[in-house]
Length: 342
Image (cartoon, rainbow, N blue to C red; front, side):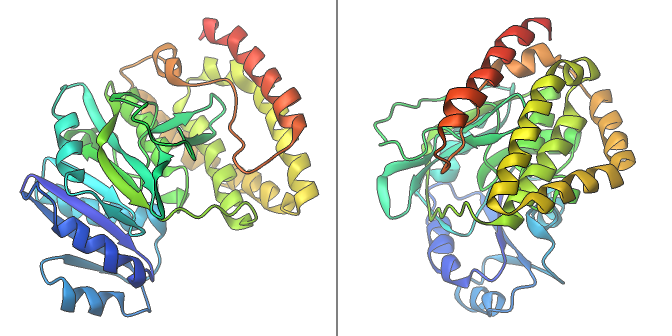
C-alpha cells in the first residue's frame, strides 16, 4: 500500500456522509483509509461499518484531541510501511484528484517532505479557504488567501507550514521528526510539525491542483480555542527556535503578549490567557526536553527557517485600527531590523 489517508472523527457522522464517498472516488487507488474515532456517541462508527466496509476503523476510548487521535492511526500506517500519510478533516469533500496531486507534488522533489492542498469554501467554491499556511515570527499561523476569489493566483511553491486538516507527509519525515505533539491536544500541532520538518532539512509545498472543499466556520468567541492557540503558540516557539533567536524576538514577544493580555481582558478571556502561561510553566521541563531532542536533529539554521516567516500578523475577524496602525507596524519594523542578525 503506497498511502494512507487518516480521517479523525469526533461525533461528525453528518460530515462523513460527504467526506468518505469523495475519498473512495479518488483516481489514485493505491491507498487505504483509516477512520480514527475519538469516542463518538453519534453512531459514527456503526454508520461507517455499514456504509463503508473498506474503511478501517480505529475506535479510541475517548476524545484524545486532534494530535493523539491522528497519531494513533499514523502509528498503524507507519507499521504498514506506507510511503505517504495524509491527514484529512471530516468536514470536507475532496476532488477526485486530491490525493494523486498531493503525491505528485511530494514526488517532484526529494527535498519535499510534506505538502498541503488548496482549500475552497464548501458552500462557495470560487472562494479560497486556504492556499497554504504562513507563519509570523512570533508563532501566529494563518491561511494564505482566505476569502479571496480563486483565480489560480497561487501556484506550486514552498510555504512555511502544511495545514493539518488536508496535508500529506512522507513516511521518512515522520520517522525522523516524530508525529504531532500530543500535549497540544488541539491547535498549532500542524505548524509545530511543519516547523520540525523544515528544521530537519525538508521543504513544504503547496499543491494547487489538490483541491478540498472545506465547511469552514470561524468563531472568534470560542475561548477554549483561543486558550489552546495561545498556549501552544508559546510552546512551539520555545521548542523550535535556537536560544539566540529567542533572545532576539523577546522584546517583540513581550509587546505582543501585553497587547493580547489587554485584548483578552476587554473581551473576557484574560484568565484563559493566564492559564496558558501557567500551563507552560508547569510543563517547562518537559518542553525543554522536547526542545533538546528537536535541536539535536536540526539540519537547517534559523536564518533559513525564518526566510518564509513574516513580520505582521493577520488578525482574522478582528477589526481594530490599533492593530493595523500601531501593533503590526511595530512588529514588522522590529522584524525587519532583527532578522539580519539571525
